Image (cartoon, rainbow, N blue to C red):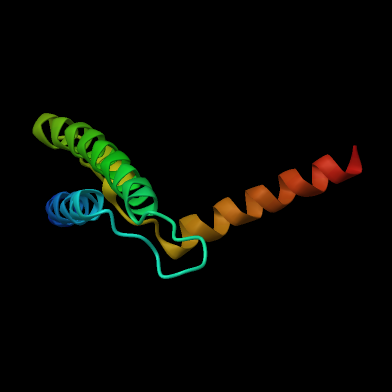
Length: 107
């Protein structure tokens, strides 16, 4: 699970780099959308880049926490941070959420 998170982080960093490059090229060439509004393409592209940068920050924090847990030998914490839940865990969580909804509706 930890290794998969590392690979995902590397991929997202490369994707972010190239997305920023595309947005920069659109800015420099004053590219616009092929619509009646002629929206500058750098606007949606920079929003996309901002989202990817935020994803990089979140992945970096997850990797930091998971790496610290891995170094200290806390495998359960590593699993909680970057592991997948089992079908039984998923079902019990959904059942608890359903109970909370029913209780809220009865009040």
